[in-house]
Image 1 (cartoon, one colour):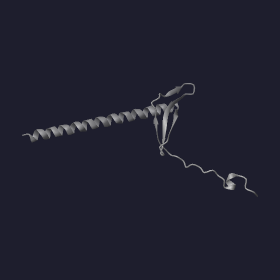
Image 2: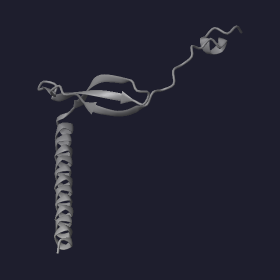
Image 3: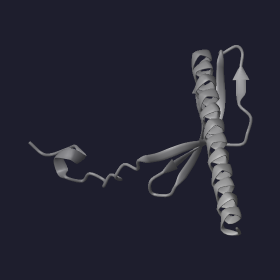
Image 4: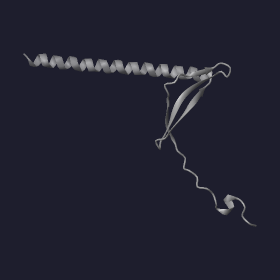
Amino acid sequence: MNPTTPAQTGDLAPTRAPVFVSHAEPLKNDLVYDHRAAQAALPVRVCFRDGTTAVTVLVLTPGHVELLHLQTERATGKRGDALRKEAEEREACEHDAAERREGGDR
């Protein structure tokens, strides 16, 4: 039997190794909501490990939008807590340094 397919003849074109996603980041464009489709589309940039990027949209159902809202609200709260704690620690260090200076002047 004579080989007839590329797999049989060994004439396969070389395949490109998969490029893995590093992360995705939202673009500054506004999210678009399509009432009839009951979906939101968030423009995002997908960044690959090889340094290339692709722009696409993240399609969100109403449930996804609510989940994303809850998660970003929680992240915003955690960021605020961390900033407050950092400010308190900085203030305490400055207070301690001032007390040391005052004690050393006596």
